[in-house]
Amino acid sequence: MTQPRPESLNEPFVPAISIDRDSAIPLYQQICQPLSELIGSGWLVPGQLIEDEVAMANRLRVSRPTARRALEELVNRGLVIRRRRVGTRVAPRHVHRPLGLTSLYDDLKESGYEIRSEVLSYEVLLAKESQAAHLNTAVGSEIVQIRRLRFIDDAPLALMNNLIPFDVAPSFSELNEQGLYACMRKRGVNPYSAEQSIGARLTGRSDADLLNVDTGSALVTMQRTTYDHTGRVIEFGDHVYVSSLYSYRLQLFV
Image (tube, rainbow, N blue to C red; front, side, top):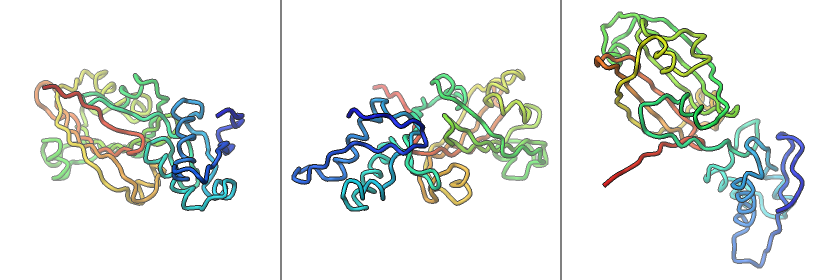
């Protein structure tokens, strides 16, 4: 498809699509396939706004459910993201993260993403029973509880909650500039092993607002307990990721 690119990411892209009503190919596929090819080839760049379903349905003379299904098919393929107040936009490159003892920050940086972190809260607390159990420490021990929002290419990717023993916890300012493990290593604390579980859940209202997704959207969940070489717990993490942007990759051997 050869047509001018929009002059800005916020100018809706109107695809030059020809509808063949005599074809056996469903109408929604005739709409989503050309868009899929433009996105997959890189012709349409991440963040580009795409014509909304109402305008698309009117222009192509198809029903609104047909246009909606075409866009939802692109969402299901991880090619576009539909968000309240933002519209339908080409998705950032999908994060395929290897399953290993690495920090999200380092993985994203190595993959060439533009990374930004926002520390939402940083609290020094006396550990309650559940927090002490996560860190394998005594109730009343001094700990730090941190909540961060991580962006890639200016799109919210992850909401991260961490519990850390006070004596190894990075400062507020450090966490705005580096990943957690890099901050720890600067303090001479090296992650050695971890126990991790991966799951999924639906987005609640507060998380949906922060991650800029619809309430009830699917999220990838991860809980990790990290140990140093002595077996001491140095971090407990409870993270959620936008599922349309994030997946884990494993290598399996016979």
